[in-house]
Length: 578
Image (cartoon, rainbow, N blue to C red; front, side):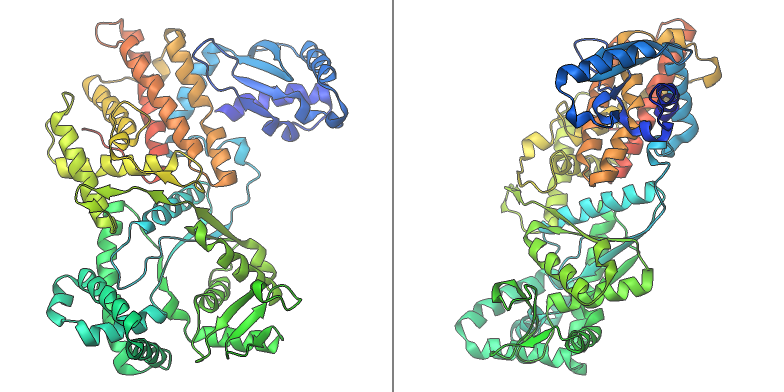
């Protein structure tokens, strides 16, 4: 593993610099591969280890870099030492590099890269991740796709790192919209339509009642009264609401199954309608609750009476708001899970909301508010089907599958498949996920169907194709035991580049663990697939000497293993045929 080499380099550096090896490990980074020339395997940033480095000019740094390199010696691990701009570079013994990387990939399996010393001082924590959180009684809107796949990735990564993760789906199942929906269903609803296609019918009712409420004040008044009845626990109102909720969740679970996403807890705002009253009482007791002339209740976050920096926590009729219920949920989760970290995954439009919620928790005296984190993401633009604008996620998944089936039908490389629809859906979902994860999560991006489904570009289709191709290779040629591999057979430029890239995997995982951005892993896997595409053409197995064929086959098996690991972290199910 890379950390084996890092530790060896750090041990020698520690003797020269008189610093503990542990202080040097993270200053030694794997060098990205280069198409132009063979590069060293690791480099030390001299600037990062010099105590008073900020006071050195660039020439001084370079002088110190040369002096440091002169004090270091090659050994059984390091075969060559050189310098670059502010760096000392280390080339690992090629035979040792080959055997160590392959051995670690096969021995560690799904944990390859996760046992690195980069994670050795990582404390195991209790982590709550709230994500997806669609609005009940509405079809699963495409806008919730990003929250679902990003939250799933974060939960996967945290679990892989050994944390105890609780995945929460916090449904929007309470609020004024249910006043509108309850009133709307009484006016325009049909029980038969509700049973046959619940979310479509509820969506139609909601659109119609919103239109009516705009023109008719009595409809809006009825909606407010219906929601007030819900808050007061009226049995008839609650029974209708419960029916909407149950039918919605039943349909959502089917969507999650298709996405390969699961949850530990299906919660919702409705769970906190009683507890939100306790929150209001607590805010009042602490002197944080203020009444306005309109009869609403607010919390002043400025401390100076600035109305623009206040958060409304109760309507004039005494009913709760989204912020009140989020406060109650946070307090309840701390009591229930005693979390070390709680992560909310929602669009960037809710940044101010979460800032306010976290600030109110701090004002209430909850020190653990510092453990709450909001991961915001940008907007997807231009996601349309052939029929026009897309509103619902199910339409997107169906469109993805149908387009992929078409592409596979016209492809010369497509094999006879037992389950083409399932394969097409998995490849299509990989295409959606990679398109979404390539950039910064906070960035908006323009969706392009044609670009998403390219089989040779930087796409999820290309990753799946590479994985399936490597699976086919393993099926065609049987491999022996790793002990019999001759490292000398993997010293060509293509093999070395792949080995060097495999060496960097732990560092990529570490970067993603620090900023929770999947783009590092996506970029790594795409580069690995491009390297493999070149190697597949040049590193022939058929007709080669047995020891050469055996070595190359093991290299390709290692690539497939790491590729599958990375894809699974991203929430992609690798396919073995396509």
